[in-house]
Amino acid sequence: MKNRILDLIKKEQVRQQNTLMMIPSENYTYSEVYKAVGSFLMHKYAEGQPKKRYYQGNQVIDEIELVCKQNALLAFGLSDAKWHVNVQAHSGAEANLAVYNALLDPGDKIMSMFLPDGGHLSHGWYTSDRKITLVSKIFDVSFYKVDEKTQLLNYEAIEKQANIIKPKMIISGGTAYPRQINHEYLGAIAQRVGAYYLADVSHEAGLIAARVNNSPFEYADVVTMTTHKTLRGPKGALIFCKKHLAEKIDFGVFPGLQGGPHMHSIAGVAIALEKARSVAFRKYADQVIKNAQALAEYFIGKGLNVVSGGTDKHLVLVDLRNKSTNGWIVANALEIAGIIVNRNTVPFETASPFYPSGIRLGTPAITARGMKDSQMKMIAEWIVKIIDHVKEDTMPLDSSLRSEFLVSFKNKIQKDKFLLSVRKEVENLCKNYPLSED
Ligand code: DSN
Picture 1 (cartoon, rainbow, N blue to C red):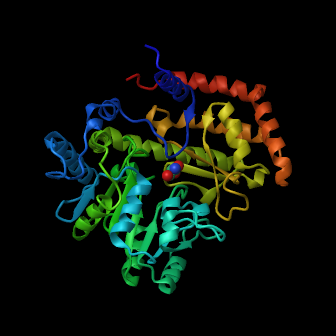
Picture 2 (picture 1 turned 180 degrees about the horizontal axis):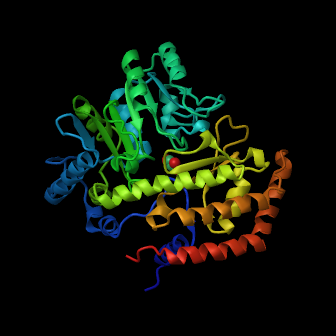
Picture 3 (picture 1 turned 60 degrees about the horizontal axis):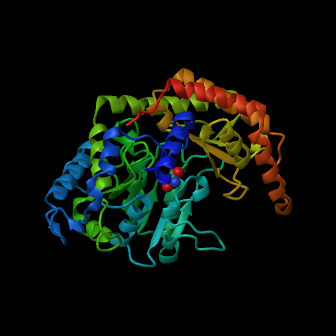
């Protein structure tokens, strides 16, 4: 029987096959994970912890969750004498909320990274005229920024700020900081001011598991991560904590924040974590970084302003202000050409988050398809040419003229011969790197 949603799923699969998925937080998972996530496990309620459930019928579920917990510790080389892991948070923002719920009281001070510099909403974002996040309504949040010249975190400045603020929690991590984080330094600052150090490594989780990015575990009290980015699992999250915090963290998740865990996702996460220990995964993660660095190098050679002058990770952030264009214009033009990126704020942003000055590009998904150096060169060339192609289309500063511009620009690019010719080339490239059918 025809089913509209199943037809749409097929359509989305075709879109993913025929375009370059270059949003750094997106990735392809494994066929075994699809089986787990679309399985009978989604029928089951399992509030509580393995062997301590509130509902009957959880024998198999308990085994699955215990395997997931064990795989999580193994993937990051952690001993269960020192570390505890909770695998039940539904996603990254909920994992962070559960940690605050477990370890902080309302009104406590948090220090986290400034959102336009690459921080994350769930670390307490608010603006001067609006408490945007629930976290900012509950806690007293201050932000640290990157250095204006280097666009890197200035740890001495963060230390000075922490000495004044005396936060109860320092958070690192975010969505658009292209460099590795000095966890040792941040952990030491937190220790000196009597704060918890929470490392949110959602973006880098797979790179850390593969040992190609710094691990925070020696220095942090709590480490949170999502499971679907560089880690290549299904949507989900993990909370690792030092053993003495285990009870508080578990209680902070359930009953503190969530209801029943999504056991189908947890099973998928367990599978991805096992794969993350393989040699193939380590090679993959290494290539993810090489590919991102190849893109950054090419862009710099062509005069693009790559934030912080490069990347240590899977993402590249480009500030388009020196090309007199912005992230909205370029991301929309790239989409017509089949290159899917996201527009993003950049350090010392002068525009709004909806029409920001940059684009953020990532290599996890295209590397999962098997693309390497020579494909990066082709892709980077297309991107540079497209930026050049649209740079005459200037978005009016006056917001009353803007909506007319947005509509006419979107109409124009649909029929743009150059963008459509790149799209053909992108589709040919994609054909050579098919996605798994199951
Ligand atoms: N939305 C994710 C990202 O793109 O980085 C983070 O939550």
